[in-house]
Each structure stands twice: as structure tokens, then as C-alpha cells.
Image (cartoon, rainbow, N blue to C red):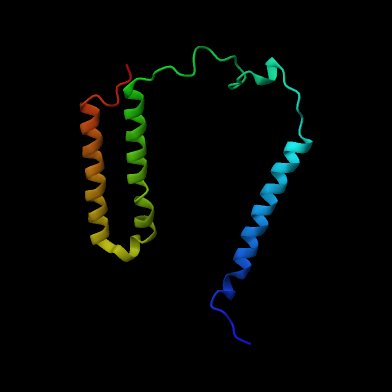
Length: 122
């Protein structure tokens, strides 16, 4: 009896097949057994308990996107502090100085965008 090199993956294939079959069965059951009644109240958009005001296709200021991008950039940069904190003892003074330099660059970047007015919300 010879064993194939794909034999260890058989449970994984079975799991994916079961998940796919379950997804299809649930979609079919929802389509067959789900409610079909609709009325204007159910079809109206609902946002946090208040009636929608204006169009959903309104234009946003570029400042909104700039602030969002800056938040994402600084959030990702701060995520580098976690591995440093985990390995703090092994990195010793060299790691500490490198992290001070990293944090210093972050502060310089923050001061730069602050002075340029990127954080002003007019």
C-alpha cells in the first residue's frame, strides 16, 4: 500500500468541501424559506436610528482623506513598538537607542504635518 504525498492534506480538503457545501445549503435555505414581503419602510435606508439627510453621493473634502491616511500611517508605525517591547531585554541599550531614534522620527513627522496644517479641520 503506497501513501501519496497529498494524503496529509485530505482533512483540509474535506474541511473546505464541507464549508463550501454548508455555504451553498444555507444560501438555498435562505432563498427558499426567507420572508418575501417588502414595503417602503423596510426598504428605506436606516442609519443609527435617524432618518437619512441628503444624498449618499455627496462629496467629502480632501482633508477628511488626508487625516484618515495620516491616522493609518501613524497607527501602523506605532504597531512596530509591540515587537520592540516584547524583545526589550534582549535588545538591551542598542534596541533602546534605535527605538528612541524611531520615535524621534515619528515626532518629527508629526510636527511637520502639524505645521503644514494637515491636521486642521476647517
